[in-house]
Every structure is written in C-alpha cells, then in structure tokens.
Amino acid sequence: MMVMKTTSERKNMYDVINDMIMNKLQNGKTPWKQTWNDFGPARNYVSKKPYRGINALILNNTEFEYPLFLTFLQVKELGGYIKKGSKSIEVIYWKTLEFSEEEKIKRIPFLKYYNVFNVECVEGVKLKLPTKYVNDPIEMCETIVNDMPSRPIIEHGGDQPYYNWMEDRVKVPNRDNFILSDEYYATLFHELSHSTGHTSRLNRDTCMKPAVYGSRDYCKEELVAEISTCFLCGEAGISNNTIDNSSAYIQFWVERLTHMLREDNKAFVRASALAQKATDFILNRIEEPVLQD
Image (cartoon, rainbow, N blue to C red):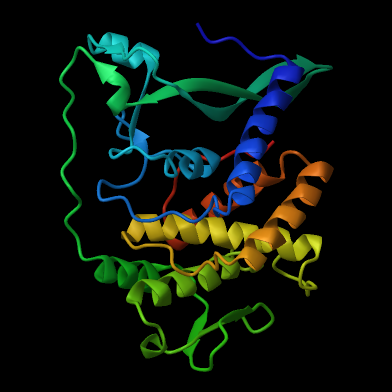
C-alpha cells in the first residue's frame, strides 16, 4: 500500500538525489553524461514506458546491462522474487492533492516515491529480455533535427557553438570539424535545447536574457541544456560526447551546484524536469507532464 510521506521524508528524497549527484561529481564523473545503451532508454519492464526527468537521468546511469526495472509487486505478480542482497533504486514522482476551501479548489503537489529493481535482481521467473536496437543513429539524429517544430535558424561555421536568443539562431562548427559524428550531433542538440527556451517555444526565463558566465541564471540554463542533450543522445542512440570531463569542468559544477542546492534543494530536480520539457518539444512529443513542484 502506498502512503503519502511526511514533509521531512519528502525533503529527505531531495537530499538523496542531491547527494548522489554531488558524489558523482566529486568522484570525477558527470552525472548527466551517459553513453548509449545498446538496449535503449531505461524503462519499466511491465508497462514498457521509459522513465522521465530525474528518474531517467538516475536509471540511465546505472551499471546494469539491461535498462529494465520492476517494482517488488510487479515481480511478485510475475511469479518471481528478488535475489537476496539486491538493492532497490528509489523512483520519485509528484501527485496532486485536491481539496475544497471556501468554495475554491486548491491543489497541493506532494512528492511520492517507490522502489524499483533491475531485471538482473529478479529470480524465479523467465523474463523476456530485449535484443539490441537496430537503427542508424546518424539517420535518427538527422530526423530529430529536421522534425523539430518551429526550429530556429541553423548556421554552420566558426569554431564556437552558440545559441543567439535575440536572433533565434543556432551556430555550430561544420560537421567535418568534429572527429566523430556523435560529437557534432551532441553539440547541435545542446544548442537546440537552449533554443527551446525562446519566447516562441517554452519561454524559459533563463534563456531570454543576457547571463554572465558562471552566474546563477547561466548555470541553470546550462544545466537544462546539458541534461536535455543527454536525453536526446539517448533517443538517437549516440554517445554524449559534447560535455567536457576535464577536472576544471567538474570543479566548476561542484562549486556551482553546491551553491545552487544550498539555496534550493530542488534545483537539480527542477532542471531535469525542464530538460525533459525541452526534449519533448524538440521531439514534438506530447507526454505526461513532469511536475517540478
């Protein structure tokens, strides 16, 4: 039976997520950089639905071969059981509590979570495991770019990629300038993710104004674009090779995220939700909303 958690328990869930993110950074790993999984994005084994937002980011970064997860109840209903010593992973989601007050309907969002297990943790039942994805990743990248609705102007040239929000224009170096095609498309995805914040699209306030490098708004917008790039690369089936993994880059985010999370412990979850919205827009995909608060 699922029960609503207390306020302190809800706060603890943010702490769990933030600790995981900071631990990865402090160990020299970028939590929003993921390589392509041969078996597709993390999804529920029973419903087949991919996880979204912060849950996608967490579950796509596990070390399991198959990105398939089940709840304890789903395993039981399939006639199986969880291997002794297996560890679950917490998946969060928002529910909205509605109640009447002075003839008005009030809605209060509250955080809930449940535990999932990877298919490798399941015994006693034969699970149907997926075969490797068979698709042309470059063709998928081209389709994503070409099918983006109300796409900004895309220009090629120079050696510095950027998005100009005043002109609604993306500029990236020529494809031949990149050693790998993955690097080119990941870079283009990053700039297109920025462009979703334009007033004509999702109207993200951190996108539609000048921001000083390293400032709060700059970091918020960069975080959204980098997580969205991660999602888009996973969708296309390419490695996310646009992100710098140098010690200077890691240290930058350790310092900025430490400050951001001290001010707002929901900052990373919010950024993941905005990144999912940006991804959905680029893919012209209508999905269930990812609530932030």
